[in-house]
Length: 490
Image (tube, rainbow, N blue to C red):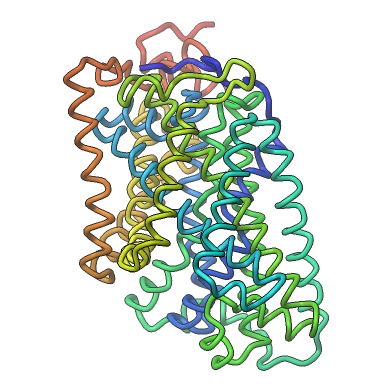
């Protein structure tokens, strides 16, 4: 299995700022707020800010896991490589497959609303037409596919435009909300505590909704082979990205609690941001926030394309999937075969969703099932970092906390959400979520029998890497060399 940097990708194309932009775009703040705010408030009421706060804590643990693992293994496959080289190649493949399946579902789930919202900016009646919305959504998808094919630099330039406008609009409305003197109810610091949850079950229900608002920042790991000084940059960018979207989520959910009545929230559903915008700035507010949601949806669609194509590229390179997926475009240094395959599959799904009503019902269940797949590959990464760093965790309190305890807590939280989700979901959602993972067993065993080197990995051990290649501090280096049986007088 490859653990080397570069193999054709556009190395050094991105810096810290570029990678932070991708982390924020991957989390899709406006899209996530529109999709989850009404549901979150309906589940936990005014405790929605607390749910976002307490779900951010374990999510930071997973980001710390990604950052630490990225320091010792730079690989476009991210968790696919890290989990395979620490826990077991089978678990590594399932980790990568979980990302591929969830991202594929999201591309369909994101493209169709992007089409409808684009039409709604011009005419509300046009947005109701399934065929027109599908066509415009497919067009947005093809544009993003072309941008991703053009390389990492072009991708970031497009993100700067889309996410930049989105963030400007969101920050503007945060400021306008703070300036309002009248509100449905005043802010109360108790909204950030545990007092408004309906017991442990109430907290768990809120967590199921809130935790996955943050999904998408991990695109930084898949871009590691194209990032300058990626051993440090990708982890820092992920943490900065989570901090930015956390502040936006908190500000908007608090604004919703203050400005809108419970009835308005319940009736608005996915249009909650448009309703909030009209309350804050009548006439223009709803349309501007709808524009932000549309741009956010398209931006996260692009980030998701990066994730799934880089993951498939790494799998093709390792021959755990057809090797053609690892082929690079000679001019743009992008995995053009993986991009073409993803585009073809997604467009076929668009046509099926438009032609068959039953597919639309299945899609609704599939969207709910995405959380299961996300929990799997986040949770496995949290365990992988503890195994990889086991020889140096005690070298300092900081490393023990940030490289061990916190990521492990994040991992346990993800698996708890997985278990809790099973009790909340319908049989169809469970079948799609777990069944989507099970389908990955077919290529896994097929390519295992064909002798892929991925299934005979060089074990990923931070102690060995620190002792021989990467020395962040003397105490950790000494602990690593003791672990390896090497002399410490260097």
